[in-house]
Amino acid sequence: MKKHFINAFVALGMLATLSSCAKEEQTDLKPVKTMAHPLDPGNYGYYQVVTDENYFYNDSVSTFARPTANYLKMKPLSLEKYKNGSLLDSVCNQDLALHFEGKALKTHPKSALWGAKPYVENEHPPLLTLNSTNPIITIKMSKMLTGFGLELNSYYQELNKRVGINISLWNSKLNKMVEHSGGTRYLQSLSFEVIPYGLPGGARLDGLNGKEEFDEVRIRFEYNPNQPPPPIGPFEVYVTGFRYVLAK
Image 1 (tube, rainbow, N blue to C red):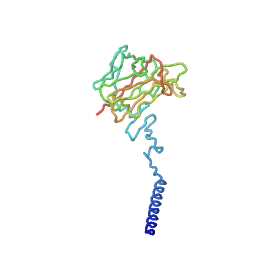
Image 2: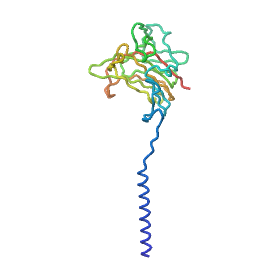
Image 3: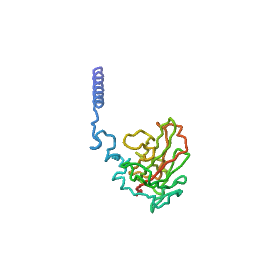
């Protein structure tokens, strides 16, 4: 009886040892690293198609910081039909309307530089001026979109503060921000090549084209880093160059 007990104890010990060894071997196994995409050896989740156009391949989203050939495939919403000096609560064409929180003033300063190519599509386009006391300025769409872009500038300044403008796309029904939107640019940042964003002639483009549906653009003034309290108003932005893709 004693002998059988010892044999059973030894057997249990061997099983425990084998089980422990198996666990140690599994722990020592290292996952094999695979390249997420041949054009993204660093596995950042995106690659640059051309300068200032990035493609997030896992989400099928393109982002744009200049009017590349792919960006210009999105449909334009022209401001040309509106008279200079008009106060507009919306702009539209046959299949889309953009609604503003207040009245937007339409002007066309043909002599003043809006932005330098290749960062904008047109150096002297018609402009809309939006004003608000709220640090978040919202533009609403009449239909759901999957692509949208605009050119924007603001001359807002606050003494001893670094202020940026964040442009994000939202599904208002879900109160959900679209992935890879929400980028921030800081006003009056030094630039040795072009006029800085936030100064006359320093307009910049912001665009996205993907699969997520949205119906709202939020233009938010924020400090660096984005911490409360928000910047002090009033706020004024200039926008133009609307392009879009309707949701299917």
